[in-house]
Length: 140
Picture 1 (cartoon, rainbow, N blue to C red):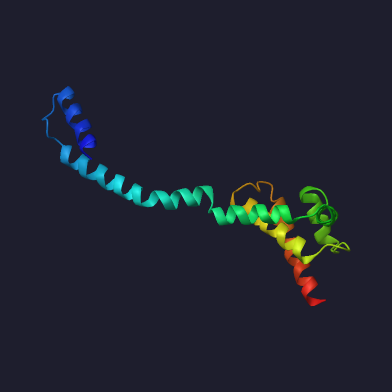
Picture 2: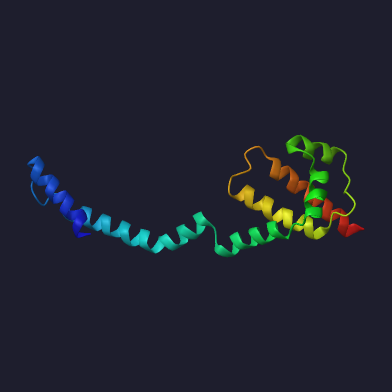
């Protein structure tokens, strides 16, 4: 806070203004900003980096997908947005694709969407397919 007022003081002296002009205001405003930022910093850091539990959950979901799960998901989704659109129009769940694999993929897809990494909408389209497949499996 003193440094912020000191900067104004030096600026005033260099520019030939009254030395105390706006010094207190700058010190108070700067002090409030520092205190506010200091209190908000932990929340900002966890929001930007993601909570460790969330990051760990996404990695665990990714790791839980076996080779067979990944093959079933590739068959289910096809390639890219067009593949997801084709599957939505001709909906069927590949044999061997499990609810656990779908749930794990949903966790990964939600994370990509939340991070803003789904620019083309592929993950959003696939997530809709996953939800539809899980609903279908519940009814069977």
